[in-house]
Amino acid sequence: MCSETYCEIHKNTPTKLKCVSCNRYICPECMVHAPVGFKCPVCSKAKPTHIEEVTKKQYAIGGLSGFIIGTGAGYIWYNLSMYGIIIGLLVAYAVGYCVSRAITASIGYKTGTAIKALAAVITFISIVYNPIIIAGYLIQGIFPSIISIIGALSIWCTSCIIKLLAVVIAVWAAIRHFRM
Image (cartoon, rainbow, N blue to C red):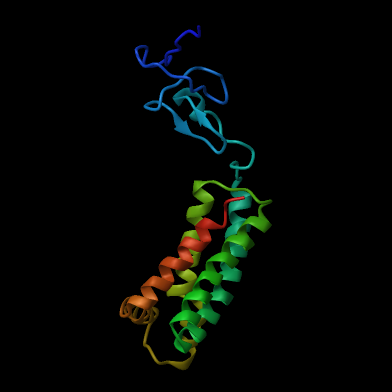
């Protein structure tokens, strides 16, 4: 006969599930999803892996490379989005993909919540407030100030559900492609 095993945190809960790090018995109530398997609450709060450790220098390098690539890709999206819904959405996805790839390639393929947030912000700026578009409007003198240009771009991007969807898809693609 096999003996019944119990969760080490919830002593009255029978379980066969073990933490992948320390082999303690855990129940579904206290288990934490890990990249491979489940961990107990103690092991899940452990130090991040080397893949998730990003230095300030790497944030700066990744941010700069993502911004440069995102600005160019966002400018392409801005000009191609008028050619139809499908093209606009596909190019928006490509903007997010390009930003995430530029960042990950420049920082050694690291990942983590903060670097994903950086990619999301850069992608959002690249599409909604593209520096090339802002500079073009300033040079042409169409708008009197940067504030009015930012306001006009905000209205332009929120005036159409397809443009909003394109922004969401681009940001989602930037975050999604950090998975290995």
